[in-house]
Amino acid sequence: MSSAVTILKGVTATRSGKIGVVLVGFHLLLALVAPWLVPYEFDAQTAVIDHAGPSLAHWAGLDTLGRDVLTRTLLGGREALLVTIFGTGLAVVWGSFFGVLAGYLGGRIDELIMRSVDIFLAIPWMIFLLLVIASFGNAPMVMILTLGFFYGIGVVRMARAATLEVVVKDYVLAAKARGERPLSIMMTEILPNVRDVLMVESAMRWSWMLLAFSALSFLGFGVTPPTPDWGLMIANSRIYLALAPWPVLMPMIALSSLIIGINLTADALAKSLGVDKTTRALV
Amino acid sequence: MLRLIARRLIFAVVTLWVVSMVVFSAIELLPGDACQAFLGQMAQGKRLENCRAEHNLNAPAYARYSDWALGLASGDLGKSIKRSKPLEEIIGPRFRNTVILGLTAALVGIPLAIVLGALAALYRDRRADLWISFIAIFCMTVPEFITGTLLISFFSVWLGWLPGIVIMRADAPILEVLSKIVLPVMTLTLVMVAHIMRMVRTSMIDVLASDFVMMSQLKGVSRVRQVVMHALPNALLPTINLIALNIAWLMGGVLVVEVVFNYPGIGRLSVNAISDRDFPLVQAIALLMASLYVALNLIADLLALVLNPKLRTRGAGL
Image: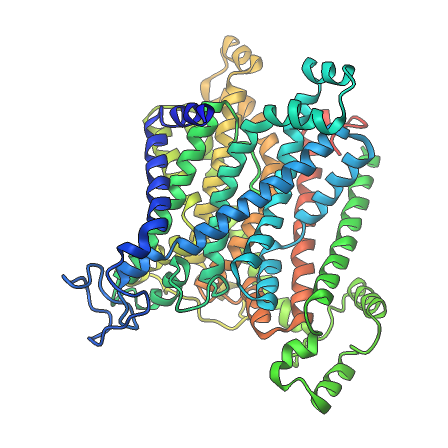
């Protein structure tokens, strides 16, 4: 617990880090308490002229179907956060498992794992995601598994590169000389020392996965209507942008502030842990 | 050197071969076959039988795979289930449009990114750098469909200068395509510039701190010459491969941008093909995109080999 506090202190040492942590914390808290905060049901329709602008009853106006925009914006990030948090967790766990394995064992196994990674990077993942969702539906579990799989491929590279820097250190050699088993060396000697890189990696990957999820829901593959979701709200209301900016602007602000928050946090995290992340590929 | 190039070529071919198998088996593993998926509730009786017979679905999977792969090798992409035209005619012009879009964005974006990255590095932590870096973070974090929508609302709704969506036939002449892609190119360029600029900035900062730049300064080389002739080429080397690796990511972005602007390219085609459950078309597009990725990475590898003598020694690199 104390290490978590230390990390948080490091991240919030800079102004942009503070802003990032506040934004992310705000969104996480909102996702938890939003169902008790919202003034209306997310699919309740009001029988007044649609595209009504902000009023006392509806602070951010109504959308095309006469639904309260504020309510839908407050609720619109819940599924995205659920899917991307678990998806990132899955990606980092399986990616770092194979990455550490490849980096530690080296030789044939390393070659096999890294060549497979190179090949999988060539697969157009967006088409694959759409295909899987079109066939198996967009249940959160399906999204978590597919996003987690594709985003883990890049983690393998990062974890391997970080492991290669650690395996040559004296304490790893000492552990080998003591005759410890490979699994315990990987768990107790290597993993704690690549943890910083993995944490920065997770934060970056979270923001990319959120981008991917919102793109999917913008394309109509992310959530099923009438479930509120930012990407879908933007997709549905953007044709009426000139008539009614509110139903587009609200989800835009919500989604952008969350992604920018995560990125600022990741930047501050990288800086405070001394991990260089700008020279990283996005994959 | 030749051996290295040969190895990379062989690996590119192997990659494509494995990707073709992965794509094929992924579609095999989906519930139902291509005809069932396409026909949906009508998938029964004579209709299903006819469709299966027409698309040779009764043959075992390995036979269909080898048919498909042999066809691909000779330039035959296969047969669409929904669309009556041959796949080459459907994919061809749209693929061309996507290449035009991507290439224009790259031609505008990469030089711009290099200049901005170099400037940000030269004025590191000063006002110019902070502004460039701040705008870059905004451009690379905000999703393309938001920047696209904002650009539409600014340039076409508010100012009324440019059309908000692209209305044209997929096989329109090149000049017509170029005249209509200003906003899509701008959207794509913003994201691309932001990413590449950050990479250039980081490696430029490293290079500016190195001994040979210091040396050139001591020799009395002018500041401009020092940056353009000494520092920049060395700063660009490490970014070439990163740019190529990021292309896979940018391709996902192209898909969204094409949908936002209604642009008749391969990305929007793939979304439509998936919505129609036209699996042969999806299969062909997936492989085409993979080939594009492999080809671009190959070019980046070779470019790095040409520019960096250090990589040419045996055992280095790959």
